[in-house]
Amino acid sequence: MPTTKTERVEIRQSDDVVRVRQQTRTLAVEVGLSLVDQTKIVTASSELARNTLDYGGGGEVVLEILDQAGRRGLRLTFEDRGAGIPDIEQALKDGFTTGKGMGLGLGGAKRLCNEFSIASKPGEGTKVIIARWK
Amino acid sequence: MDRIPILKFGNALLVTIQVDMHDRLATTLEEDLTSKIVAHSARGVLIDISALEIVDSFIGRMLDNIAAVSRILDADTVVVGMRPAVAITLVELGLSLAGVKTALNVERGMALIEGRLSESEADDADDED
Ligand SMILES: Nc1ncnc2c1ncn2[C@@H]1O[C@H](COP(=O)(O)OP(=O)(O)O)[C@@H](O)[C@H]1O
Ligand SMILES: [Mg+2]
Image 1 (cartoon, each protein chain N blue to C red):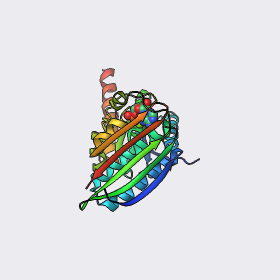
Image 2: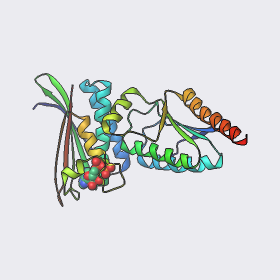
Image 3: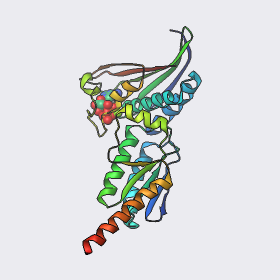
Image 4: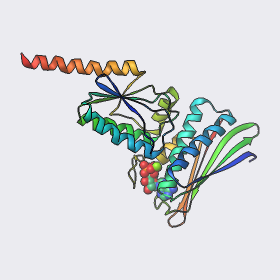
């Protein structure tokens, strides 16, 4: 799939979560997403960036503007080399948390985007991909 | 360290969130508000979030916590000025903010708090009969 722009933001501390939100917003505007869709993907990116920081021990996100036969979209790939998720189905359930959260981040991010995929291996890390199309 | 200012507004406290809050700032706000409610015997807390472009589960939990603690301290929390796109997104995220009252703007939020106050004064008057 043709990618017309790629950016990368490191996620090492809590200020970086703010930076991820801002960068997601900028690209969502560039893609031409509606205000509601911008808000949805920025909210999802905030949830996933915080997971990368809190549970993944830090990592990065790659933000890409996609163009599929004239249809534009924004794809975000969050990756860390943290502890991984032993049971993904359980982690996706609303209300499930191993921390102090509300357990809405993964399930919420899935609902807020058009595409969602997650791959994780205990001891190796976690990769979550979301996309929102115009 | 930066802090979000808390203003006294009649019987209530008013917090206007103007920045994209990082997590530490949110935690500090929770603590500051709790001590100010006690210090000023505030009966209400108005949190103006009209400048916030998103509310994620972290901020949502902060709002819920503030509302829960205020309630124990006999103060009502009203979140005012939520943008429509934020409200739509919150529902899909799965955040109900069940314990938080909302109002369109600061004036209506204040009216809610004053409404509760005059009701409880009326109750007190009834009790005396
Ligand atoms: N990047 C990650 N690395 C390891 N575990 C994760 C990661 N992201 C999520 N998890 C696990 O999935 C759970 C659910 O995540 P989430 O839905 O965002 O809720 P919360 O952040 O409130 O715990 C987390 O509590 C954690 O155990
Ligand atoms: Mg989370």
